Image (tube, rainbow, N blue to C red; front, top):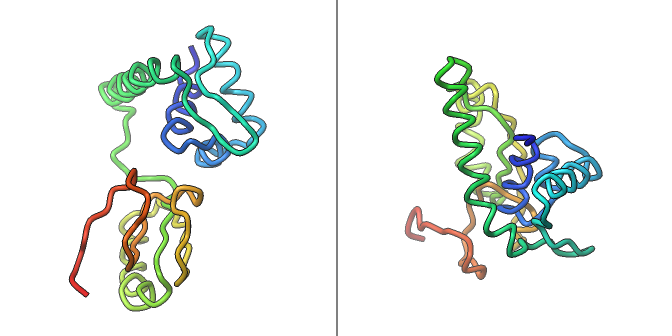
Length: 160
C-alpha cells in the first residue's frame, strides 16, 4: 500500500479539502484526486464523499482513518530508528493575522524565526477583516475576535 497516498488521505480528512491537502504535499489537485482514487481502489472502499463544493469522510473512511494515522506513525518511527528521521522542522506554515498585529508583533520576530527554522516556508495572510479560517486552510491564526466555528480550537493569549 502506498504510504504517500495514505498521508494524502489523512491530510484530506483533516482539512476536508483534497486540493489543499495535495498542495501541502506539492501535488496538483488532479494528481491528488487520482492518488486518493488509487488508494480507495487498493482498500476496496470509498474513503471520502466528494461533491463540487464539499468533501466529507465516508463511514469506511472514518473507520480507516485511525489505522491510516497509525501506519504513518509506524513508518516515521521505523525511519527514525534507522537514523532517517529528521528533527529539522520543515514545511509550509499557513498563518493568518491582522495587519496591525503583524506589524507590531510578528514582523519584529520574523528574521529570527526564519533563521532558526530555515526549512519552514511562511504563507502569511494579513487582513483586518474576518475570514473563513477553514476554507483558507490556515494552520494558525491570531485574531482579535471570537470565532464562530466551534470545531476550531482557540486560546486567549492576552486581555484587551
